[in-house]
Image (tube, rainbow, N blue to C red; front, side):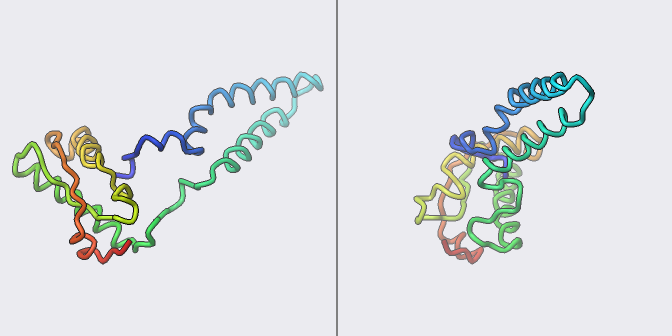
Length: 158
């Protein structure tokens, strides 16, 4: 489910770095070759300097540190796991019953206009991922319901 993302995902600095990686790599190789040719002898500097430059730039612009554990709401690992498992269980139940549509009940976050952590299109995105990976038998059209009872069930207060 962590692969579900919104439109703004591509604008994040750590993600956009991936778009420019190959262009950056090409320029660093050319730069390394130029360093090698400048002094006319074999030098490890032509490999090390571009690599260090890339690592420095990547870590400098990666302000959100997206590869570390991140929990915006300070929930325990058990809460996060049980919330995710509850969502999956809803899909499994719908798949088992053979329905083509379902209501996906998720946490309500009125403070953020119910846009985080689950947006209105998250249900179809999760369903698509689960069906493509063979976890459920077919795509199930979802309507997301922001349910305050889920907040109480998982003891989440936004």
